[in-house]
Image 1 (tube, one colour):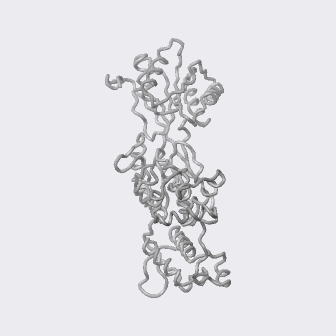
Image 2 (cartoon, rainbow, N blue to C red):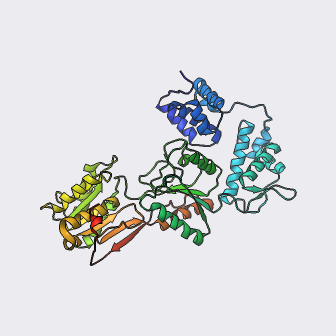
Image 3 (tube, helix red, strand yellow):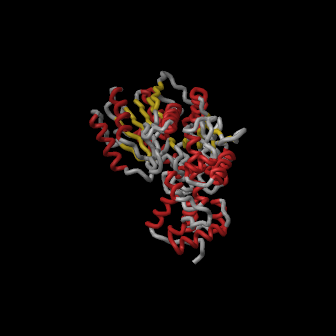
Length: 470
């Protein structure tokens, strides 16, 4: 069997996933090496992806093959070990190797400076005092201080004593916006990137924070993605906010959302298991009951009786269950859902979708006077079909209510009550959460997606022919 091929059961993969998702980074990298080999990656590719030598990859594959997960741990070194008194003074069991002690100390000091526990300009203890407190050698403390000076968290003292916390530590007040696509091929995502960038600009001046932008794409082995992940490991930012279409392969061990201890949030198309995610109340066909209630309430308040629901079909949908729930919500509000009460459509097939819309609005038994659109991608083509099939006067008498993920009202030629993502309020909720974490709150309120309500009204419509013929 080739060294780059590893085979194990589900339990073995789960154990490696747990190691890959936690500190220390050295152990996580070794677990990722084994996982990549199990997925069929060659030694050369694994070495390039993880930034290590090919012999290093072969070493950890051999150790895992002979010893299992225990083989991924550091072997006892020959360096001087701290005595029992020093370990007791540190208040915890010291790592077994000098490299492990250095990694643990760098991580601990970095978190103290980044979180604000050490105020900007404040001095850290001398190497001798820190060594006595942590139960390690003075040389280890000096190396940790030098590493954090290179990263920008500490500044060298002008005279005796320990270094000082930098006035502009890398992640103090800085946040990262992960936008869609790559630098070469950006993807705006129905206006999400434009809305988030505008919100970030407004919040930067109002709250004295700054936002960096990145488009690393979805390939976790791409150079841009690898460099961004390394910067996240160094805590260059206080937190990361992902745009919803940039899910960034969250199930991959080398993805940014798998980094431990990094505050991350975003507007997602679906909830994720990893980290404190926030998700819109609609998307990917998983429309919660409160969304249906909001749209039904809009129709009921408008005095309508016959409602038709428009929703998109996706692989995650359960159309029968969704239809039953939507019909029940309408019945409780005193509305009727006829035989056209639920339409499962695919936005990807625009020709078929427009054909179905044309049949719906022209059917003699389709007497609806209200339409609840649960996917904003369906709103504009349905408005065009309604105008073409019934004419402008009849189309304006149909009440339209839509609830979607878009942060802007889609360009539609008819009046509509639209609820979309409020990018500024959502990003502000994320900043509040990051500030609470930095202040030391253990269970701050989780970030939440905020929505705006926009009512578009007009009495006269001039719809160009090319728009209706698309």
